[in-house]
Length: 239
Ligand code: 6PG
Image (cartoon, rainbow, N blue to C red):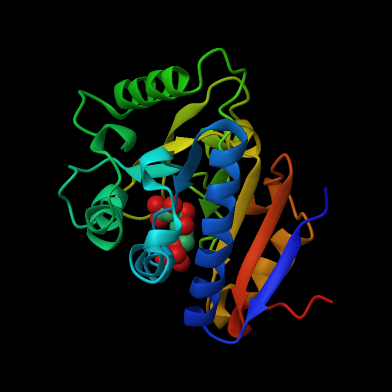
């Protein structure tokens, strides 16, 4: 399945377009199978999308049928400034009527990252009963300056995991300990969307879009569609 690339003049235009399509996807999924399961990404890029989902498109999404997960998390307390769940709660989840029982934050209060990876995998297996792999309707992703995605960093054991749904990630920067979906768990999603802005990512987007498997992001191939939402600065100029 070839990836798709959509380019937008600004990050704001990108966030607005992604929110609009996401709202349509949510309604479609709820109509088709009664729920919309989405995995959120960390980092800073998703903030603009979250803002759109909480405001202009808030009423277009059937929040009572949405289940929220994460693709990865830093192994820090839930109220830590670097927590992906904290960022999502501040920018989106505290501003929309999603039932708390439908928000599945990655646990980070266990004895070890490994123990919390096991806990999260058990949560996922409960949310996707009997599934071989967790089939999210949509998984949101970013790409780091080294081509990582979620917390699958180049040259790390989590990147080569083929059996487990969740693994411990090792980042080269603080917070170094992470909990992350594995590549087969990411690729089990019906759709995976990369949201990328900024000139610094342009070359990486071009390589990952073409499937350069030296980059973890280049190894993402969702079941139905892998879509890149980029702003003009991050657009590698692909036709
Ligand atoms: C994280 C993310 C990570 C992120 C990229 C891009 O926990 O940091 O999951 O994979 O998506 O590092 O981050 P930016 O959006 O901040 O560029």
